Image (cartoon, rainbow, N blue to C red):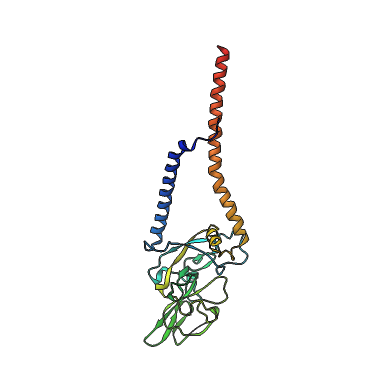
Length: 273
């Protein structure tokens, strides 16, 4: 007996299974989009990490809980300054939230995804919001509450290697956890001005590790993906594929065993008669 049904017999069930899978996937994506608060239609709220600028040293195998090349994160919409908790310094920020402070992805404060200088022709940057600079256009002074700076003629924050900084607008100072300099430092050449709220795509939430590496592989941008990420990805794919196959095999063996039992029962009945 052929262990597999003919393709014609399986076609109706295959069509149903595909339709159910599409509905489930659509429901999941719709829920994610709704939760993210991102405009629809528009860019998907899921972001694949390409660079290693947010990596941490001595991460455990698999790199869970931090942002690494090949990870996928959700970009949750930001509508106002208070939606983002900055890393901060001695006078304010995430360290002063609750009893133990507020951490995301291995350090204090929120991580934001933004368009550098508001440009749409370059890849967005995903770095940690360190503080907020408030620029008073009327008198040309700056206030940075997290570092105790008020109505100063320039911004000097030694912890961020910023000295005599004089931007012409208000916004976030941002920095990659794996970078020595903030994005606004002249030598960083990432985003010379503080990140305006309008440039922020969203703040990072959640983590789907490893699977974004597939996109990076197909687009030729997988150079920064770590070896343990590839290993975890391969193991995950093998697990996901083997589960339905093992269930199908189990059903087949159960069905075959049942038919064999019925055949043996009929054979014994013939012997008795």
